[in-house]
Image (cartoon, rainbow, N blue to C red; front, side, top):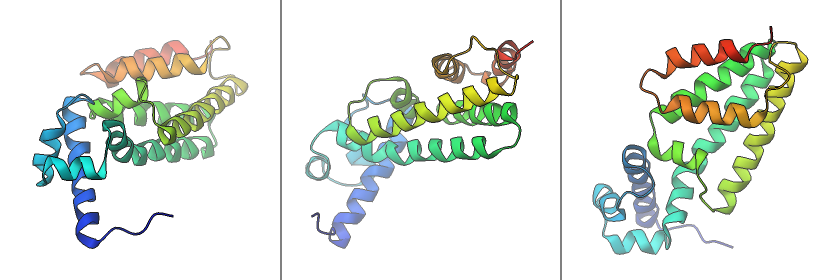
Length: 176
């Protein structure tokens, strides 16, 4: 059982996670850990003491955002209109990934961390449910698959004018 951290240790951990979100968000997951420690105002040894491997820091920084994606998916599934739910999820996901390079890399890449893998599996199941629900409602093409949605989000969120391009994609996804 993990003991609670001392107040100063918890503060340092929180500072490191916040700095990691900022630095990874702007520079990607390969950003220098020294920059994260510097931005957090701690020594690099403190970073390695709290997060022995880069993946530990990535997991601490991005697991809460993956949990937010699951919340967004639950909200999308709760909407009465299946198409509106799908569009809400896609727009929210594109916006989130377009503003955070590190998060986009976590979503589309292969970060091997047990809790991230677990969250991504749950997200995949939720996306599959969103796609199936929109197809059952006759709103989404029958040949469309969950992987198509994941690819569309990844590709679209990397475009500066992603909202405009997403409109074109969504028109193409609709059932005729």
